[in-house]
Image 1: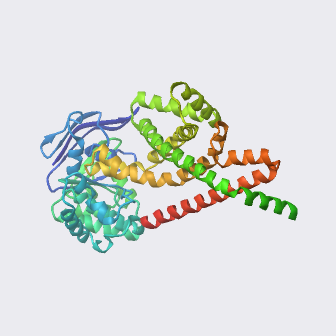
Image 2: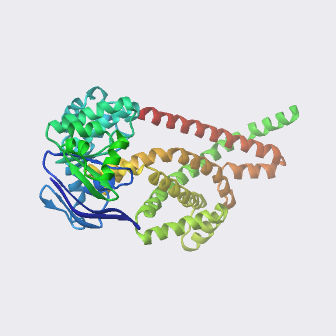
Image 3: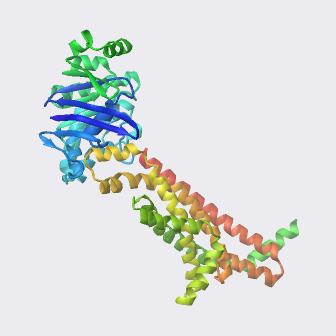
Length: 240
Length: 222
């Protein structure tokens, strides 16, 4: 579904990604872990072209993307993204947040979009909040709206950039629950997270990124019980 | 003290018909200055964030020159400078000078408000497939407008008070009337005290309206 080949990315003199290869299969749930600054969030942002790679190749759904020639908006519409800080539109109600892109980008009729929006809000358990503004929601509710907003574009793959890191501990569960449900429905997902319980329960594959390269890639059982690299062993001890 | 009060009252009662007419002129000058300034400010703010070096350069020159010179010089320059090419009513010369002057300050207000919108808003919008134009129109500008209302209100009040400077080219607004009244009646203290009260009341009304509008916006959002 998403294939990254030999991805390099630098910010000025700092090389953040040093030749990353990642192949995410359809319906696969891949969890990226690593210490902060390891490059895992940057990799995710490259897949959505919020950051432009310096060299390498990104293929989405069988289509290799040349950022200079393509309409990046069209590609981004197919790749959903959920942010650490939600980034809901504060001047729009919950429902307006969800239906904004279908109406503006897909030119969907308002009535149709509203129906879609209400269905998605029901799915994340927030249909009763349709008409309130984001400032009235808890962090967990905001993130569930953000997920619904992303799903409204019917993306082929969803990227999650530390979706629960900004949440109070008691609100983490409701967001992970929604993500787990999405995974069960067969959504292809790439998740950067520090929630190891989620990685163990939901991931098909856990990948450890360290200093801009992939140093471990395995199914969750092998990853946590029998890691190969020293750095991964240290990391697992640190987070558990 | 009582005597002062009674002479001020006497001046007020004698002059208020003229002052009310002149207040209309002051409000017209302010309104034109504000509307024109907002339009100019928006254009130059867009130029500044356009990414084009040429447009940015033009906007920078405009803002630097206007902010670096006194309004009274700009009024005189526009009035006498433009009269050479095109005969202009002194009222319109004054109003346009106020608009041009305001435009530079309002451009900076808009630019600050647009750049002050959380970059995450742009990213979220782009990640949903909205292009740059859609992102600006639907997500960034509405939020920037909200953010710019308090400083804009402040600028409106400054414009109201600054409109007094066009007395120098003989526009019949309230300060020029007070000036004339002071000279004719030999009561400068009372005349300027009365005009100060007119400005104070107008500013208070403006301030109240702005606060009401800001509250209304916040309620809508909450």
